[in-house]
Amino acid sequence: MTQSLDMTMIINLAYIVAAILFVYGLKMLSSPATARKGNLLSSLGMFIAIVVTLANEIKLPWENIVTGLIIGALIGAVAARKVEMTGMPELVALFNGFGGASSLLVGIVAAFALTNTTFTNVTIILSILIGGVTLTGSLIAYGKLSERLPSKAIQFGGQQLFNGALVLAIIAAAVMFCLNPGIESPWLLAVIGLSLLFGIMITIPIGGADMPVVIALLNSYSGLAACAAGFVLNNNLLIVSGSLVGASGLILTNIMCKAMNRSLSNVLFSGFGAAKVSTAKIEGEVKPIIASDAYLILEAAQSVAIVPGYGMAVAQAQHVVRELADHLENNGCEVQFAIHPVAGRMPGHMNVLLAEASVPYDQLVEMDDINPRMGNVDVAIVIGANDVVNPAANNDESSPLYGMPVINVTEARTVFVLKRSMGSGFSGVDNPLFFGENTRMLFGDAKESISHIVGEFNDL
Amino acid sequence: MEAVYLSFILMLSIFLGFELISKVPATLHTPLMSGSNAISGITVVGALTAANSGSPDLALWLGTIAVALATINVVGGYMVTDRMLAMFKKRN
Image 1 (cartoon, rainbow over the protein chains, first blue to last red):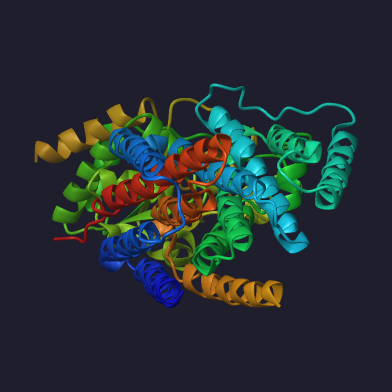
Image 2 (cartoon, rainbow over the protein chains, first blue to last red):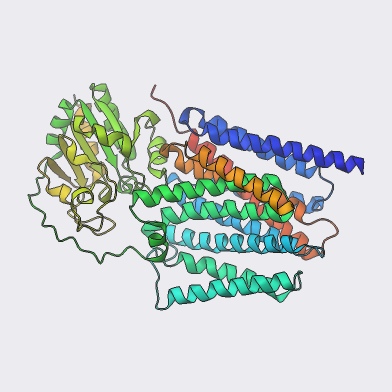
């Protein structure tokens, strides 16, 4: 008895150490200079937690443990090595789903016990519910991101009514399970099935362009699912870690919603309506420029801000853009990359894509930092971005984008917009920037245009 | 009492989470998310202890799958986060 008491004590002490390492690891993520070490510390915490748990007397038989750990580690390692940086949103979506599935299963396994209290039964239901919703919601998000499923919002008449009924059915089944608990209870199957269905139903009405918000939200759910599993097993470490993740996902969800000037409920319950059409007349004319003229202006520039959008990554132009940045810097010009929060396909995605192309992180500047200084920028180069630089968001109250924070490139002395043709952005909204007084349109493939300018610098 | 105690822990860690995460710069939000995936893999600890040798076969197998899924998150999450963070370099 004393021996097992000592063991519980040791395990709990180790869990405290693990929790401290998780917290400290996240704290070190506050700067790119210390972030990598922070991630390493966090993984050390995880290692300690797992090893100490394995020393526990009551656990899965060894052959099951080894099978689970080896299969999981292999799949995880291969996925982490193979994934392209453009594919990060899909990977995170899948991982969210696995986290949810794991909590779902832990909830089911806990229901096998015969002596559960009502409190435990309630937590089992929560674990299954949150885990199940996270699982199927994430799989749908993955399908939309990887274009295995149609990315547009799927909506049908009576959808809200159907979902409302679904919620009531889940509550009813949950109550019935708590009254008739146990693994044999048919209500357990009902809760599992309804949760999985609910995860699908809340994700299909969300359009592909809103997926960054959804994966941030599902990230949060996967943490909350771990929390719920912690309540089931009476495990503090699961609760602490789960709530850290839950908080992280919520903050990111909030940031993404703000960056798109939409409320969370608007994202969740209505596909992006292109119904609102701007009534403002766009004045001015399109002034094209050719690459060699663009070179002459850049060669004389003292300060350049490059504003990338996901189009740049699609064209695989980030490497040649970095070459251009290097030439400009060697020429004595200050170069910054101005990054809008929704520039990529998930929070922070554009930064990773640029870091992969060897752009140093001190050149990556957030929208709120660059905007007040935009007046001092000689040339702003917009590559593959559209809505995030649309001035209508600032000054055209009738525009659907009105109120969305944008990078104010119009305040720069000259703006180059690299574009294939005169089309509108993701939202289908016209962009008065293209007709601006100080805007020059560099038509054609972004990668070729930049390569041409880099070529001119090389010939110097 | 147990419910109160666990909720107390939950509340405090949510506040701590908000404080910590709001200090993470936008540049690192993608590694933050994949790192969160790794941390949420902590359910592996629960999965290891949820079933034991006295449990029915079905429980053992479900427990094993839960271990595997959570381990994918732990190993994959930390490794891919490290891979990304290694790319973030200062100007030389």
